[in-house]
Image 1: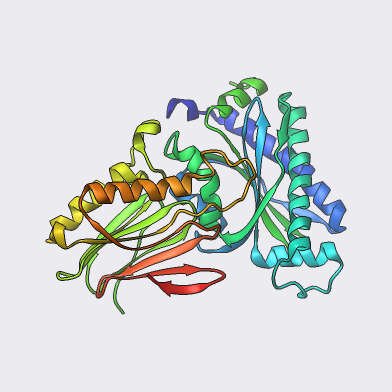
Image 2: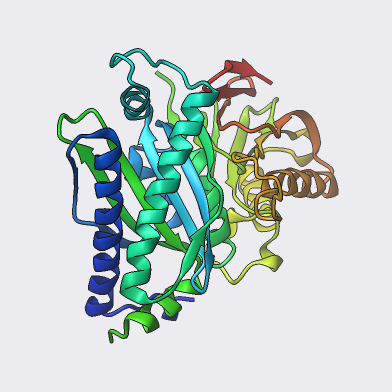
Length: 204
Length: 161
């Protein structure tokens, strides 16, 4: 198991670039939908102990909205788009043309809108992923939950936990120009997929 | 202020009164506590998966019900607890995302709960309270002064089991 994750600095860079291009595409899509500039940070590519993944988004009891998509194809994995509760409400207000601050809980329509955003972001991300790696992948229909970050991340971590004690995450943070929205986009390849991805980019 | 001891994911802690053991943000994971009411010592274990034999080798036995529970039990006994007096409580085991064709991985919550109960029964430890299932996350804690096990959720607030 450990061997599989023994990546060279160049391979880490290649993964970071995948995150960069993928998230860049997603950020552009989001920016066009909500008509706001969206910035993103340099993607973090890290091999982290499974139990510390929730700390990446503010700790396991931080309340977040998570849109989860399973990714099918040659390099299967999971996509998780996490928004702090406040950001999710702000995004719903923006999408639904409501006054900012109007949303304080999510109804069916709000959830549906956020899932659609997850869908669009995942599609944009995977398109860029395909351009880069020539690996074609499709997302499942999205699922949404608003809950503690630890509980939501469980879904992804359990699958990795079966295979090892660490998670390879490619994480990008989005920020809107007025700081009303920030979100974390995670691509978490299944353990076996990493090798496929690395081979496809052909970096040693 | 009594000591608050944090138990991470795939981890366990043992302690004695007046400490409180707490674990944040459980989804499909299970928080299982053992408590000796007479000596007021106990432990809290946060497992992720039911069965270590179905997973690849891991450096962390606390991740699994079958390897984590015996470890915590041994440590609680080391603190002087008497096995026949021990009582267990458990919470968690949710299914956070409802997919129509849920795979085994999605149903891991209920498999976790079953595994924990089976192992407790095999060890002759009585389960006196349980709050498992559902589609929501939980933060769980056990107060070792009285064995009170609290379950906190974002929609329903805090309750004692």
